[in-house]
Length: 320
Image 1: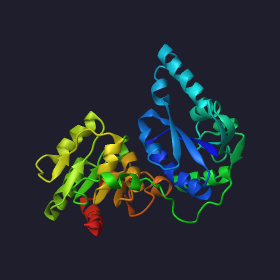
Image 2 (image 1 turned 135 degrees about the horizontal axis):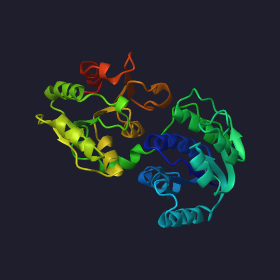
Image 3 (image 1 turned 120 degrees about the vertical axis):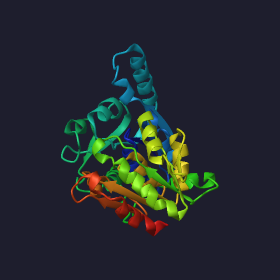
């Protein structure tokens, strides 16, 4: 049995889909998956044992110049690749018009997705052959697990979902395994940022423990912030620019992680590392850290700047 998963982005959403694949693979011994995902996240599905083929798509890049000749050619080639395989089941876990129209519509097989009352963009449900009702007030991972169970007709396990990717990185852990912390300071939305003074206060509190702190980054302005946070501290290392796989390896070897609400925080959860995530406006009950040793510090005032470094350090000492 071969199924197609449509979950293109973002990083956190792609990671949230992994436990559903584990459920399906454990429940249906003969199933394999192909997965359509944004080109920047193609490494993630390849880490899961049940994924046979990863099919990159570039909607984010294409929509910047949709009618350019090279973009039209890329879209045509993508649709040709997609249509080569007849699938027993196609599951659109993205639930957006762009995914339903460009991907799900073109794929060959019975198409499953959320019904109009369960989905973010109701028009997308028009493209599905079978529509499923999934409660909205559930964690995103549990919603996807239920969608897969209904689409592939197996009973969803009662146990907590298993991302099943941590073991992929066990053989490549760094030599200083478990002797460092990671602070994930970068996120896309301003209201999700923790102020730099608070980060530096936390760095100072960690200093007497003798543990190193590693600061990853993805964009130049994030690198600049990391350099500012590390200034004057010998126990802090600003990492070089790394691939997603390299970052995952470093996270897998960390003693613990402190993060804002960002894609790498969900990667930390998927790798079963202890993680303290800071939340302001975001509701962690729906999209927060899911898995082993995942903890949240939530601002009562719904503002990140009200979270104090001492609060975070007190929680962090449980892992030190």
